[in-house]
Length: 323
Image (cartoon, rainbow, N blue to C red; front, side, top):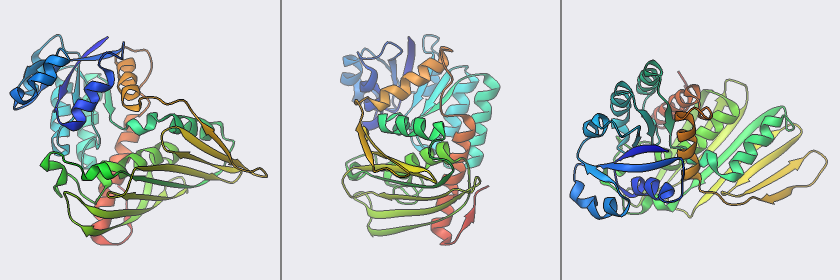
């Protein structure tokens, strides 16, 4: 069992705690970190967590083996480096960082310290996505030609910490909240992105933002891709992989449709699973040496590189090369 500290106890930080509390035999939260610990005393007491005011206090506590960050995106790089230097494993909510240089610094610090780095792309752990990854991995659709994905979630307009609405912390419309999950899945399926073009069309500003993000991608592997996110429409998730011999699409958390050449589409509904808990437990397995963490440092870096380039392309309104 991994004893972890949660840094940042907002809406999503509480979701992380609740996902494993009384349900996981691999990871538990024993400490909470907040600049205003009194605000979270009742929540902490309910979950048996000690409250402290700073990351430094959690890093100094020898009983804490891992740090889970649910903090503003611009803080992630420095917090990851500090955690690595303290010799503790670190799970960081998405986006890992806002720039490729920051991501490289964070990843390098973890590699030098020999500690596990994980990132909060829980949508990888949807049963539908796990099955999609398996099907693509068999090669039965090959060659892969094109990827399409869409993630919309009107919860991004729900009350949240003010920093989540700032252009500095959440650039390019729904990119940080939803689009980056699709981008992560694309990197896992198609590899690094070579170049891309993007646009955000806004109808109403935050906090209840009405806007759409559209991205056209060219992968280094020669695969093409289309990514979309709408912040103000009900929940919608789909990732489709097109190959010469068939296509497969993950629809929502639990459904997948597969169409093989010469045959009609087949739909399968999979048993539901808590993807947030599954991601945290994959992190715990990696820390305990039971299995490698499935999101590799190379994929993390490629995702942030493409993320940063999308922000640039939204501003320039032209194709941009991914560094």
